[in-house]
Length: 234
Image (cartoon, rainbow, N blue to C red; front, side, top):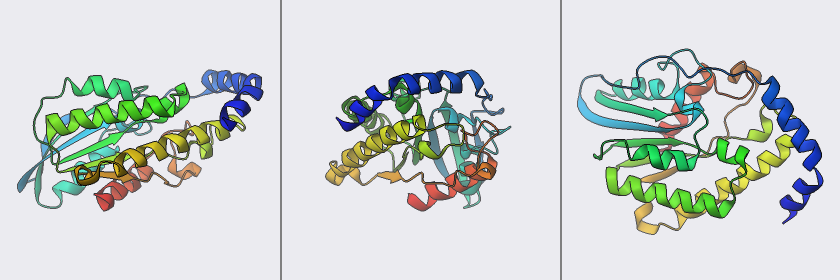
């Protein structure tokens, strides 16, 4: 209620700031390179990465520098033969991920990494709709892929992105916090079925040296830290 009232009172400012950000923001491409492959030697392992622009590698030049490439490199170094696939697209929200999953072959996965939520925050997805979509995505993943581990990445501290001015950044930050709380509640409510799923706190550094030139997406250094956080959390 308080957020809705505050947003209504600030509506003219938020609308102006939002338009200005969209008009002046740099539009960076997704990272170049393959979206699937096999790397390493050793025991076989399947890796599936699902997500939005951050997962797609916006902010770095090549997929090797993005979070998927970092994960493949780290897992292959553990004497694994990693069969990996990246399914991600700039602008995708939770609903898009559910639809994209239908195009992924239904087979067991050892590790699934999910990066989604920023675009839901920007579009103002209500917490209850987020909950419903998240439960639908989780059900589809469990049924189609029987994963050993799932790293569900939380939404970063969008209020600290250099690109965003206040009070817009504050409002978006509150929205992100609400969706993150719902995510953690959904995971906690799963009981014994929660064993495969892990919530990954995305409180990564957001200083300029950790971000791409657009002040919004992770750069190569940030992707390395993100990879380390995922592997530590699963």
